Length: 110
Length: 115
Image 1 (cartoon, rainbow over the protein chains, first blue to last red):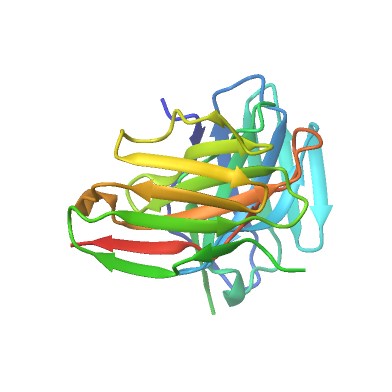
Image 2: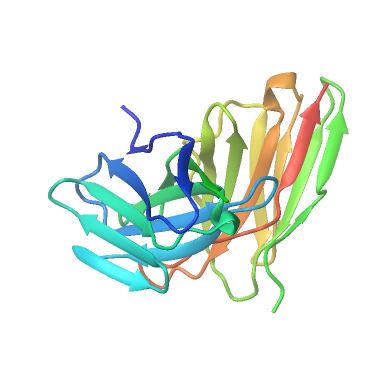
């Protein structure tokens, strides 16, 4: 079983809709959770970090964490074509070892 | 402030040749990571250094791979001999590990093709 799992997609949503990206992890001791965005041919860049259960909002982005279910999600409101990218979930179990999922490819249709 | 700097950006080499990838972390960061990214396996952690010391190299695929960090501002990842299956994008990343959960910042990557 992979340590961090994501649906590879592609997830297609129309412009202006809400995109919902999901991630599950296997290590119950995980403490820190991150969402990175990676455009084709580019390096990953951080969008959101979340450390405690609940929601964390930053502009059009909301990260949700449920440690009991070992589940992290990212919501993108008012999706734009420029949001089309691969979204990587990363988990740190407290050992400073960041493990990434394989990513979900998002396509926002104009 | 300069980000993580990697070189070369692109490398094409023949099977059996030695490849050396270089990385300069962000100044002041004390942790450095080497990742490999392929379509099939995604982003895999190869090795992680903290204060120039290798902490976890369990992701290094085999003895053909080696990594060093002789000082706080420089690291290398070497593949000898290289094989076609080593073709991938190799990312270096750095972080200030004052506590768990610090953001890691990626370099632009080194695109390696072994023919």
